[in-house]
Amino acid sequence: MRTVIFHIVFLWSFLLISQDDFSAEIERIRSVQSVHLDSALSEVDELLSGVLESGDDGRACQCLELKGNTLTKMRSYEDALIVLDQAVDRCSLAGDKPTLANALNAMGVVFDRLDDHEPALEYFIRTSQVYDEMDDYTGLVKSYMNMVSIFGQQEQVDKVKEYIEKAVRLIDKVDDLDRVARTYSSAAAHYSEIGFKERNYLDSASLLSKRGVVFAKEHELKESLPDYYIVLATVDVLQERPNRALAYCDSVFMNEESASYRALIIASMRKAESYAQLKDFDGAIKWYDSAEVMIEEVESLFYKMVLEESKYESFKAMGNTAAALVAFENFKALEDSVFTMEKYGQIADLEAKYEAEKKAGEISALKNQVALQEAQSSRKTWIIAFIVGITLLTISSFWFYYQRKLSLEKEQSAIHKQQLLRSQINPHFIFNSLSSIRGFLFDGNDTKPAITYLGKFAKLMRMVLELSSKEWVSLEEEIKALELYLEIQQIRFNRAFDFNLSVDPSIDPREIIVPPLTAQPFIENAIEHGLKGMDKNGRVEIACLRESGKLIFKIQDNGIGIDHVEPRKNHQSRAIQIFKERLGIIGKRMKMTFSFSIADIGNDADIHGTLVTYELPLVKG
Image (tube, rainbow, N blue to C red):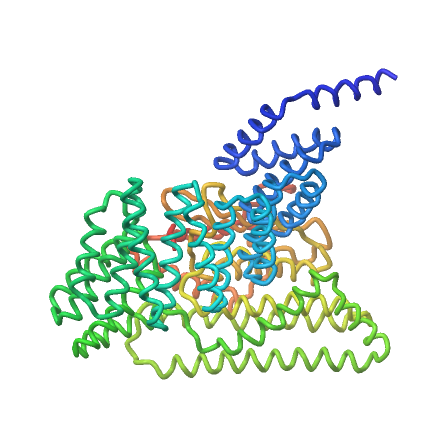
């Protein structure tokens, strides 16, 4: 009886918290979220627990929306979608339209980050409908511009134009000055981007930018001006009006204190392009050099590539063939290889198939299982044929890549050499996985696990092909590839080991770029050799840390230790040699030294294993 009374008192005390106090608590957790995501998640879970006990749908939907937002920032996208879907249901019950709009918009953002454009668009449309019902013009304009972003990625030019026009028509009803400024800037930038291919959109880009300039000056929004001037300069360069373009670039530098590095870099390139149109080679070189200095400071490979492409186009137009050739070679060295794009398309279709099956409850997989039960030999033949086809596709891709490398000039840059070293790693990586599938497939008569394995393998192979064609990849992409590889190996070894992959909280994996597939060979050695013979309780720990301005990778296992591993000199020494060459090339180019060590950590009968530690440059993409 006392327990019941205590429970009732607890619920009443929770319900007596005013809405203002509750809202203040929600905002406090949002402020924690900007500093420490784990703490914010813990606190919102605690708050949510009390809210659910009280049965208050209104407060529950706010907590769920905040939790979904937190999970999104933690890149736990699948969990975020589940929680946000619950928030949408609760908001509908409570009639909380503002929070409902936020939850729907957040779901659109998650699907957009997953490059799943159709559901992203669907949720942005639903968001706009809720904002429309509330006469919330600020939210409605934001929704329209989110849809513009999706249509832009899909290259649906007519839809981009349609929704920009819808957003612009509502601008006068928007009270949020920053939202108005961002709308003018984003809309003008979209039109100028389209204008590179369809020049008739450049006038619209110019018109919206000029409106934005007037608005920013009227409301003293100086930080918005550089973006408008960049678009205007871009339009004039594309329309070959170099003197006007130079004037707009000068306006960017006059507002340098409020201009982003991106704006200053692009302004420098537009000035260089303008001088090239005026046939002033020295002026062009001066501003290209200025852009290059700023790009080196932000360490952006993307802008380096854009810079070299701009140089190539400018010098070619000026008739300076030698300078254009150098710029073109530099551009090609930085540009992602596109020779396997058609292959990627085939593998991407396979991956999309399995992802769609997963989201739809694996309906197609169940149908395949029925077909397999009807004809055992047919299904095995299909799977084997599938593997053979994928294998031939892989071999042909790498053969084409190898032939392409042989056709290059003898004196290659360090970037080309590093790509060749990566190509030596990929065949072992992929064919080892194929071998795992083969062994797994013929382990028994039940081929359903083999189908699941195939789905993971198809995704893994596409990721490996994609990553190995690049000189640098985001740390987020690298981590996803390693997680998928470890999941496949877990299945292969019947869950004989667990793994943990952690990243220093001070590191944003989306911003940091690394050479691809550096950790994989050491993880493979840990599983194949370090944990060999262990049927359970195996452990692989991968940590990515920030120390002294460098990125530190640590791969540790609790196996027998490297001092007790049976030597396999050809394989292991070659893997280490390749890795050291890659590390040496990176160090030479960046004028830095990076350490690398492999140590046996056993010091008694209970503690044993191997620890691999190596350094990489801390580079932002």
